[in-house]
Amino acid sequence: MRMDDRYSNASYSSAGLAAFFASLSLQDWGFIIGVAFSIALGILTYRLNRREQMRRTQILQDILTKTNTNNPSATAQVLADLGQKAPKEI
Image: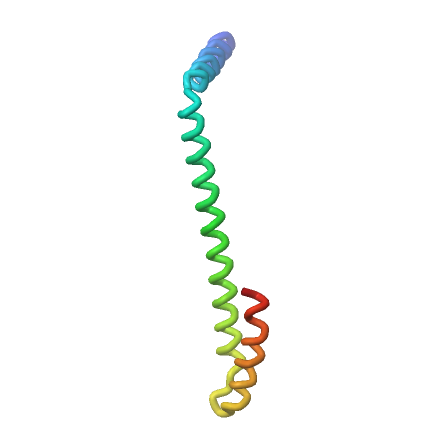
């Protein structure tokens, strides 16, 4: 392949790409922007829900690790402490 062919192919490719995007109507651009925005919102919603689930899982793990089955009053105290802390986190 000669060097001129590479530049020629790049030139035709960029011209074809520019012609394609120039042929899109305003309605097409609106659709493309809407799809991109919807995908971005979906990803952000997924990440937010995952973070909240991890926080809740951490709270449950704290309850399980700090409770004592032999001492119910200490378990109640741990649950009360976590209950006061949880509304601030959620």
